[in-house]
Amino acid sequence: MATKKASARKPAATKSSERSSARDAVAVLKADHKEVKALFEQYKKLVESEEVGEERQAVAQQICLLLTVHATAEEEIFYPAARAAIDESDLLDEAEVEHASAKDLIAQIEAMNPDDALYDAKVIVLGEYIDHHVKEEEGEMFPKCKESDMDLVALGEAIDARKAELMDEMSAVA
Image (cartoon, rainbow, N blue to C red; front, top):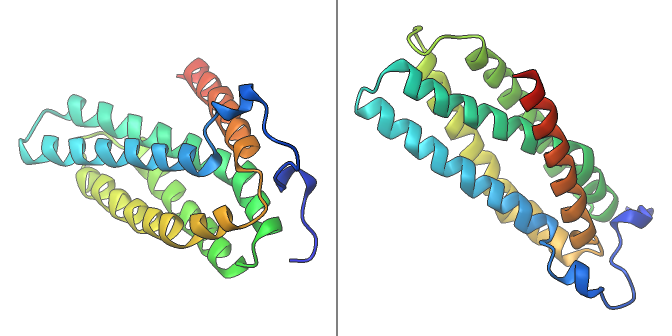
């Protein structure tokens, strides 16, 4: 795209020492991916060992919370910057549709009890959706963003701040 948002550009000057310790947006998002993947693996083990519903539900709720926070921050901060910096509208459109599908499944899971029919199947399918989404982001989108003039450190800071706000909001509601 010809027009790029100023907030999405790398600064011309050397980064200050306080910013040099910050993680860039790709690192922040990849860390989220890794964390939620571990939770999905934990959930599968609970299902395989036929753990009681409360234990499975606690892990499922954590998965849903982390995915909701991650997707919101990504949609509000990262995707708009990526749209401005890279010419990959199809890839970004698909990512947003994948987010919408995941959010729908999250809403279904959150409305259910762990002993309801299809509860475990929905959590496991959500994990499969997320695994596919992560592969596309990490394999296609993130490398293109790293090659662009996006200020990934500033975006990482903004994503971390937004995630903290969302966690505070969602903890207050719970």
